[in-house]
Length: 147
Image 1 (cartoon, helix red, strand yellow):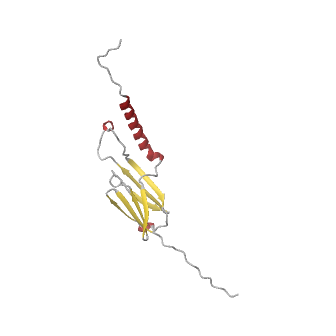
Image 2: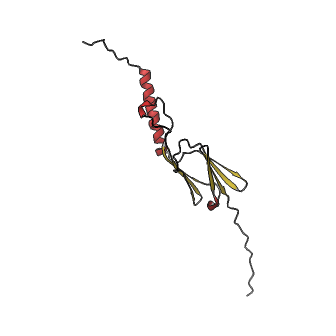
Image 3: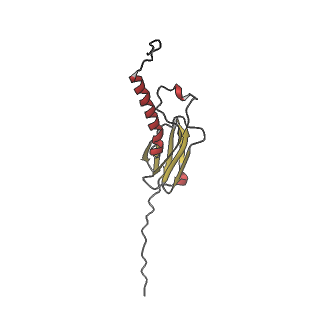
């Protein structure tokens, strides 16, 4: 016979919400592994003779982990984000932000002079300015040779 002295109430909505939050967190953490080339989001535009690349805000960027390089007209951005506080996993009621190492590479839409690239980091937004390679075409004159 069952005792009713300490009944445990089953709350299906709470169980569902916990399951949904855990699944969402697992998916978010796996997104960087499945789609590693989508973070951080970028804007690329041209002003005068410069290509400008801006990232979304890099919240929680670990000091001295940000690395920017350009190789064969491919821009690479690497870094690591860390949580702002040491909060136990069990304390979270909702956790949507994802932390850890990230890397992004993208082919630049125009040829650039990589050695003259400059970057700034302000309010978590990385701005990279790269001079465009000017048109290097040249008309070659033909000198007739008398035989």
